[in-house]
Image (cartoon, rainbow, N blue to C red; front, side, top):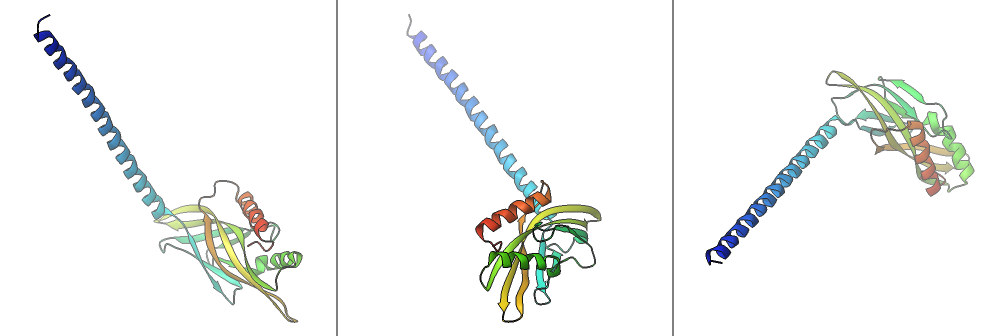
Amino acid sequence: MSEEQPRRRFWINLGEGAAVLAVVISALSYWDARREHAVVEHQVLSQAQAQAAFVLTGVAQNSGRQIALTPLKSTQAIQSQRYIFPAALRADPVDIAAAAPRIELDWIGPGLGRMLNDAHGAASGEGTLPVAIITTYVEDGEIRGDRSLYRIGYAWQSRFLMGRHISLEGISLIQRAVADDPRSQVERSWAAARRTSPAGG
């Protein structure tokens, strides 16, 4: 065997190794580019979803006798809403038109009073209860819909010879885009809250 043959095999092996290394680097570069592209797509989609999101804000009015509701985005106009409360507080849903989106204490006050009596709780306190809100609204000239789960905050205080005073405090978002039956979602959330506190806290 001549001295040239081992040297030739060395350079052939080195060349093959370099080729394999180039393929690996190319594959890693492609994978990294695809991953970066996927991250950018996810960010764009998240931003689009955030811009299209419908979220309600609520302000307690009339000494807590109602919560006035408005969309977080001023470009969204509510057309109608349906409110679904825990069946123990109100069995039938409440439907309203766009004139005054709101939650009234009168809708659930009697049920809350019965629940607090049964719980034999403290003379005063705070609690929460879930409500599913199904909304039809207009944005950018299109009619759209939203089904979300919210949490209503309330407070109570027993007054001597005047019974119990219950007031609504406000609302907060629990879950957007409810896919399951809203009634089932409300009842599950209500059961979980009742396990934590008899007053729904």
